[in-house]
Amino acid sequence: MAEADPGIFAGLPVIPEVIVDNATDLDARLRAADRPFVVRRLVADWPLVAAGRRSSAEARAYLLSYARGMPFTVSVGAPATDGGRLFYDDAMGMNFRTMRAALPEIFGRIGQFEDRADAPPVYLASIDVKGYFTGLHEANHVDLCDREPLASIWIGTRTRVAAHNDTPDNLACVAVGRRRFTLFPREQFRNLYLGPVDNTPAGRAVSMVDFYAPDLGRFPRFVDALAHAQVAELEAGDALYIPSMWWHHVEGLAPFNVLVNYWWRTTPRWLGNPQDALNHAMMAIRDLPEADRAHWRDLFDYYVFGDAGAAAAHLPEGGRGVLAPMTAEGAGRMRGYLLRQLQQ
Picture 1 (tube, rainbow, N blue to C red):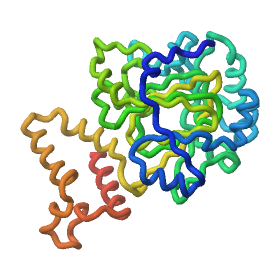
Picture 2: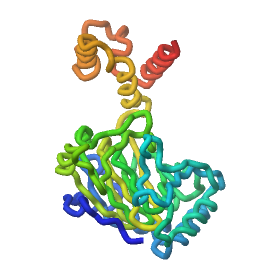
Picture 3: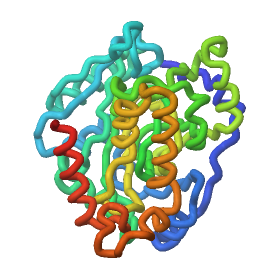
Picture 4: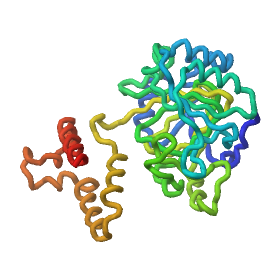
């Protein structure tokens, strides 16, 4: 199968590259970074990378040697799916099917269609490495010092995943094949024309713009998004740092692709998910009368976005409740309170 025309990607600025000498150097760069960067050959010494360089069949055999044998969730598109684009259909359902299957069966199907132009896109997304494989993480991992990341593996054929973002910071490492990432700063969400937040291909709202055929009549501000875009093509062994909330459009460019990524948060684990707060606010506040919404906006500024100390300064320290600096215990009490309220 011929590779997709790079189209709009060809003229975009490339994501800067840095050189790291060791785990301490990488740690320092991650702590200082507020923008994406590429590290070439960061994981070039992984055995999985070596297997993939020999052949995609050897990469699949290598992964199977560590698999625990439990079924995997896999997405399969129709052969006519546009360049492997996993997206909505015309009715805002999905243009792919999701099913459970054993990894040998999935890999057998990938191998059967690998060299065919009509190969259906097959995608295993965000698989917990430690949960589904025994020893794979230990043999192929990045030393991230004192971070406690979630390590996930992404396996698939030629695919295109619409621009989306994630709350955690992300280090994405290409282990097999090639991938192209197109990134946008977090503030570009208005220019990416996001889809629904409650009906998504993979849990996060995605851009409705087809990057290979952007409809600028329907999505005119996408031109402004492109003015802030950066692109990187990664070979096996390369890695990309994606800061929290940066938008990324991801393509698997080879007939078989494997990526391992690490997600971590710099905030305590017991803090709530901001997306949950946004979703609840849409349900509870968005459709109120204008005057009420203005008042709630003022309250949010006072309690959430303003000076937290000022909001509680008139209260004794022992009686500030949730207005005090948040702790794990306080977060637990608030979570319980919210659950009780939502059940009423």
